[in-house]
Amino acid sequence: QSALTQPRSVSGSPGQSVTISCTGTSSDVGGYNYVSWYQQHPGKAPKLMIYDVSKRPSGVPDRFSGSKSGNTASLTISGLQAEDEADYYCCSYAGSYTLYVFGTGTKVTVL
Amino acid sequence: QVQLQESGPGLVKPSQTLSLTCTVSGGSISSGGYYWSWIRQHPGKGLEWIGYIYYSGSTYYNPSLKSRVTISVDTSKNQFSLKLSSVTAADTAVYYCASGPYSQFDYWGQGTLVTVSS
Image 1 (cartoon, rainbow over the protein chains, first blue to last red):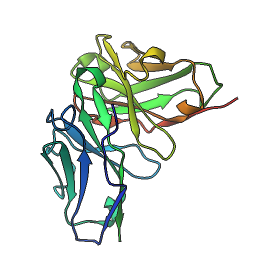
Image 2 (cartoon, one colour):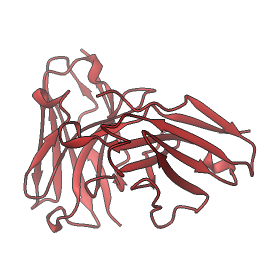
Image 3 (spheres, chains in turn orange, red):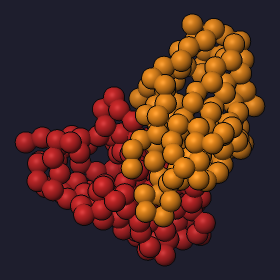
Image 4 (tube, helix red, strand yellow):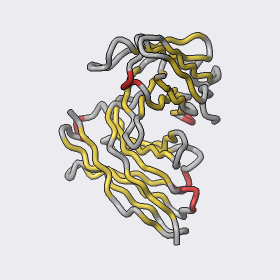
């Protein structure tokens, strides 16, 4: 099972919106509504930001939103803030054999 | 709020077995509903799910690591553990314990770096 494909990096100015894509196959992203997104600051553990494609855990700002179309999931950060600068990883359920597959990771830079 | 903390040796020799323990506080492994996973991150790289255990003891492992992985649980101590056998330099990584419902990882430990070197 290959890792899900994410852009290596995206950037935006404070207040702008950025979107991170996460491309898989019909065996993972396209096959289930179990895509989650994680934010990781340097030297820190990942933090759950989105689950079940578009749901936000309590405490996550509503600037973060998720969606999916076909085999590609997306994370959008609206109103970009300095503290959003981090690495972001998607993760998808991939069926009863592989279970979970992560994305390659995207570095978000706030200009 | 569930908190997880990894512990174990930071240095393991090649061909030996890596052993880590995750201690859970703020919640009980026995309460059910959550799956208790190990996830690793090679230096400067992405995340790789290793496997999970449920409070009942049922396990599931990443097929790519299955032959070398054992995850166990000690509900009396509210801990679960990872053993990875026959390690090589390719197993050098930060190892995280994490938990959540079946489809996501809500809580994470801080991570522990394990280096495989003679």
